[in-house]
Length: 211
Image (cartoon, rainbow, N blue to C red; front, side, top):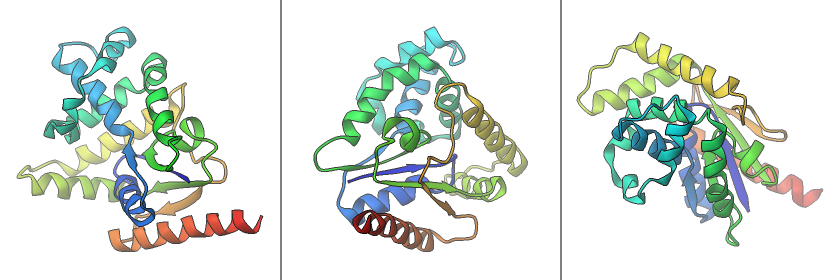
């Protein structure tokens, strides 16, 4: 069973995907980490993430980068959004994601093009979203817990800019996949969002059994 979880930044899709993987005992891949690894690698090499040729060199990152705490920073998230618009970068990372999705045991993948490009054949698809303001609140809380003092308006602007890049890029834009169940987490706690996600997955599986 493949569960494809898509959605914009800070919508809660990663937390939900991890919970689904645990609930259904499936391996999980946060595909956004791949793009973050590319973006961080390019930046550390002094490259330009807006240059496709330079961004492509970042695709040869050492997997030890996945343990680097900087990988999950706001700055690296912005770099990931910038390198992900390049067709050559996306093509370089597609096989790794599809191989993970198609392993015999099944898998849960979260990202921005899982249900539309990476695994359109997934029997279960979710599209997780939330308002820009609510997502900014979540980011602000995360950063404050790290001892930082971010500007709320700047976070909202960054999230909207990232959404614009993700939804309007020419290759694999972020959108709700055909057949994907919509889950708006704006007014839900983590626990409630996970419960609703499990219910949506079970409903899709039951619908397929009956079909």
